[in-house]
Image 1 (cartoon, rainbow, N blue to C red):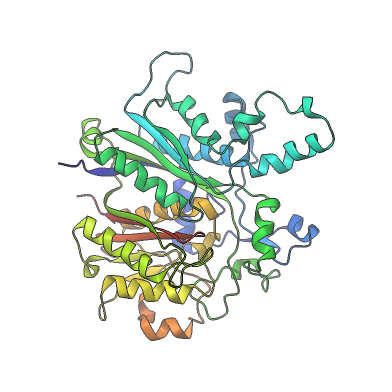
Image 2 (image 1 turned 90 degrees about the vertical axis):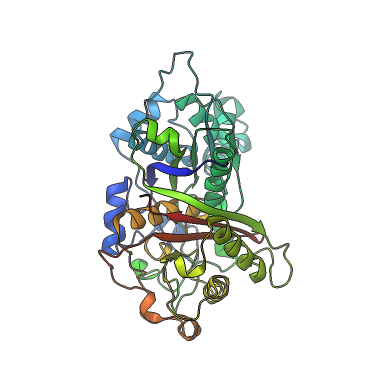
Length: 425
């Protein structure tokens, strides 16, 4: 019999809050974290806005100094800050750095799209190009490699089960959570840190800007720029951050009297083979539908049981197709669930999106609210024809009973992930 999997700790670094409480309040108030970024303008970006977490304070500097991360890639820094929050939130004891004890039943799966890119641009390339290799220091590789974040967290938390990194474009974060859940369901671990992060770096965002995928018509109105589901959306808004979750076997959590946020009752990930409408930048609709249906089947529920969809919804031309896919997958014509997009508030955190948005879904589930999708007052006309506009909330909905939430993420390369969350009772 497979094990049950629950969430017992949450941590977040984001443009709308660097702790769970401030993050939740920003969600409830519909506060945008998108700002004008002069550096992007100086580099002649067409899109000169974005969401960047503020980690410049003495408290964080002490943490970086303690764990020898002062010069680490931003992906590592974001991840460590979020993971420490989640670990503390789960009421887990921080291991002694010098003790020999290890946690053989605890592991980590931490993903990113561009881990190491920020450090490469900031330090590695300039020093190598100027023939100053000796100034790179002895820690450059461990902070540059894609698995650097997982390696650092393994050290901090004495994790001795599987510790891996993953990268599946914008589906990365959700995939991390699913991979951790699989390990626990298979009785191969008791607890995992699961999540993802991506850094602020013009060198990372430049490619999206050159592809004309980023919003460029709202440089003078940053908070209005991220417009999922809107008729006037003109691209996604790039942002950065990290989300980390403690994914735990139910009995292990109960035995230590852990707080339980939610249960993961279903999931699926697949790919579309870049056929039948799928491509490097678009999802194969049939396989998206298959992914959602399989997650529902895995949870042993039907579409009518879903109370809220926390969509991938980026603010591009693909929003309509995603909504259409949800309707087909849920097999509903009436009594549609609510649907919202966290990206309307903080932009698209790329590889971190799936983890941060799952945290947002969990907070809504636990606290019985639905955050607004802002900037969609001019709802896309095609979406209006297939979805009840009253189920796309533009204002906070409070005191609503939520039992099941579906969270999905889709990424470049035609990859899909879907998680079904259930209120723990």
